[in-house]
Length: 543
Image (cartoon, rainbow, N blue to C red; front, side):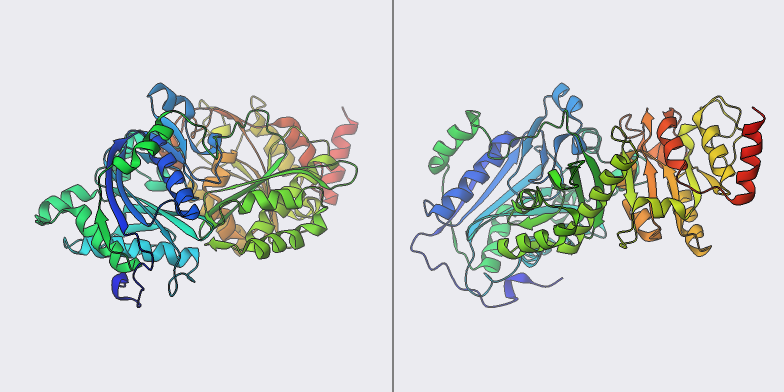
């Protein structure tokens, strides 16, 4: 890893007031996020100078700037346990904060030489300075794109970036200790994302720093070393200060003043959704179109990516409203250009892609009277209508969890079509159309199956899965690159029951349900081979 303090010449603070170093101690997660936001605003207005603040937070589930509540946090669990629900000014994914993490907030103004660096490079520089500080203790922490520090592949810190005009807020958490069980319960993080084998291996995904620091027996205080390396990297000389200057900020944050970006309420949200995974994170779009004109009546974008300005997705949602699908690409490009967007790990093409998927899903639902259903669409970038995908679909994928747990076929291929569940009807509809009907028995089986379909020359497929699975495991669908239409399943699912590890391994025992009405409508658009069609007609004539 590069040594960021020596990477390039930096100019010392050109302002007369010194950069301040302070430790504001343990406060609520809400207070710490509000203090950061207020300090960024004051730095932009010139009311304060550059500042480095150390802090710790009481338990809080913290959303990124562009995230929604329902998709990321387990709200009921957090409220039962007294865990704050908060939003930070920066983008990125959801975090669980607690006193076992060292918070770091650096508020500075962009300067000459390094001031031209884009958001991704700034995050790497900030993480690099933290990594250099840890080297003092013999800890080799490497930067992991887009915003983590890792020790031998295990996460020890995450960093985030926000801006107001030409002022920047860097925020990081150093994992001194990790409460894995509470983290997994507070956030909607599937345990298999961390490890396939449950809590024990989930702990192995993280590298708490406290044991490393204790074994190093370094005489110098960690916060002092961090301040030195951040100062060297960004051309700052910090002057320690007390907390007296923060008293008015404490009052504002603790008095419950409304956040600039309140937690959203997803109740009653309508429209068609799409997801697209990028190197920087997952993008999601929800659109609702006018049935007469086809124009977008409403658009919403959310993401766990980082970008400057943080309001980019809101600007795009406003810009595309009232426009028809053919106008979307131009509108998105204009917003990126005018906003001077600095995306981290995604592109304007990714945003256009996720909007196009949502638009086509909505149009398909309107064409076939499926307004109240949830469908997930993946295409190969051709922009072809869903009907073309269905016309060339040669396989149907069925999740094992939709089979009753008493069924001997639940964890294996095949179905007796006994008529006691919707899976049998799915097999019948697929068989009539000459499709390969496959029960997916685990996540690894899904990857193998999709790979085999691609090698066999399959052009498209249909399937069923829960929307949580589609988003969390989107990489598998992208790797296959096969156009697909997937129908959401209902009932018990592993994400709500926090049994993702069992589902990953194919051992989930609760039952999900297929939407038989939607399945029937969708399968009517999959052509029946001529010979099979004659058999079906003859059978129907005998009824």
